[in-house]
Image (cartoon, protein in one colour):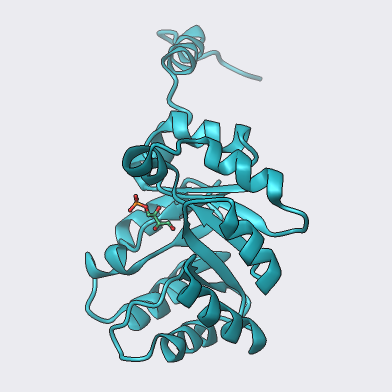
Length: 216
Ligand code: E4P
């Protein structure tokens, strides 16, 4: 099981690293635009001042050519950067040209199991289905993740994205996701069950005494 933060915000990234169970981050042009005019420089800083083990970077188009931007992003940290490319026909062509140069690629914004079929044919390392968008915009719902898992024949990973609450987070893993990426607010929610919080509070009360026990 792998968990990623879906954000490019520096404070969120630092908070996620402190959560200890977060493996890395996923970004896209919308998330980058919210925090910087220079996504490559921002990515460079995030990679250098945090211990992110993986960084999913999606070319933003801020510098002209998307392929060139993808290559520059990957060269920031070749052992940690994975390129996100949209799961479209044009996207797949770009993905293939990056894969041919040895750059790992994930097909993102996947809305049908065909993304997995194409990703495996092209040699992508992961497919990123948009769970909430599939539900909200197209009514295709959470079966998207299980359909991707069913058509998969090789080791292509499923990183469920567009995850908006703790229920969708859990469901994605139940449906066969290998990883989930979610905003900080969702990651902070996943273990905050009222009964667990109550148990934690009650345990904390057990030895709360007026005078601490003297030892020795
Ligand atoms: C994932 O990598 C995307 O950044 C993200 O989850 C997109 O979905 P959203 O815009 O619906 O949150």
